[in-house]
Amino acid sequence: MTVSLEERMQRVLDRLNLPLRIAYLPNNLKKVHGEIIEDSCTIFVFDEDEGEAWTTFSHEVLEYRLKSVTFVYRTLINKLIEGFEKVAYEKKEVFLSEVPLIVETVKRERGES
Image (cartoon, rainbow, N blue to C red):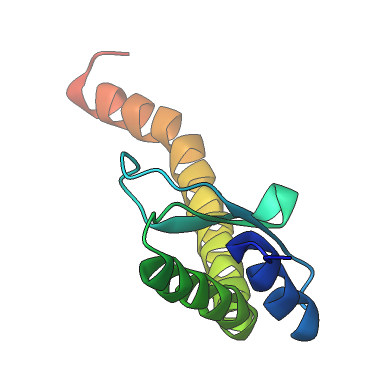
């Protein structure tokens, strides 16, 4: 009984205890060799050549594991952005609240009241 490439790749994922499924869909019209769809927890491999498919599979598994390493940095950067957006919003609100007073003061001084 011959074990399919997809089944062999799935065995690798299972041995590595990764919560992923593999979908081997050879298609040389795709612009990418493979991709991970997080919502479905699936690695898609599109290479037709088995050797290239294994290379793509390895790349996607490594990329998946690397995301857990970079998660800390992405979280930190997102929190920093969130903080800066809050500060910018508060400064904008202060500025906008001063606009009527600035306009009215300039009008008065010009004699336009």
